[in-house]
Length: 204
Image (tube, rainbow, N blue to C red):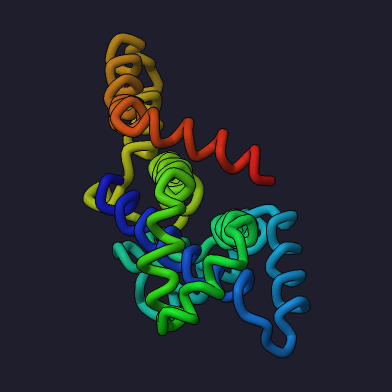
C-alpha cells in the first residue's frame, strides 16, 4: 500500500501540474473541447470504467497481480488536472509577461515561478491523492490474486473472514494500523494542507 500510494501520488501530482499548466497557459486547437471531455469524466463512476474494460487491458498486458496494474491506471487524474488548472489561472498574467521579457521560456516559468508559488496547493492536492491511493480497495481486490500483493485495505477485510468469526480486538488493532499512516502524514503537513485549501478557496 505504501509503495502504491507513493507512486500514485507522485504520478498524479506531476501529470496534474503539467496538464493543468497546458490547459491554463496555452491555447491550442481543440483545447476547450479536450478540457470539456476531461471535465465530463469527473461525473463518471470509477467502477464503470474500472471493472471490466480496465481489467481486460491489464490482462492483455500480463500485468495482473503486479505493481504495474496497481499504479499505472491511476497515474493521471482529471481532478488533479482540473484543480491545478484553476489554481494556475489565478496567477496574475503579468508574471508570465515579465518572465518572457527576462528571457524565461515556458518550462522555466513553470518550475521557477509557478511551482514555488503553488507549494501549498500542490501539497494539499498531494495529500488528498495519497489518502485516495491508500484507501483503494475495489481495484486492488480485482487485479490481485495473491497475499503478497494484497493491500492494507484487503488485509483488513481478511481479518473479518477468518473461520467465519470476528475477533474485534484484532480487527480494531488492524484498523488503527491502517489508519495510522494517513493520520501521521496529515499532522506532518497539516499547516501546508490547510493553507492550500484556504488559499485555493479564496482564489476561486
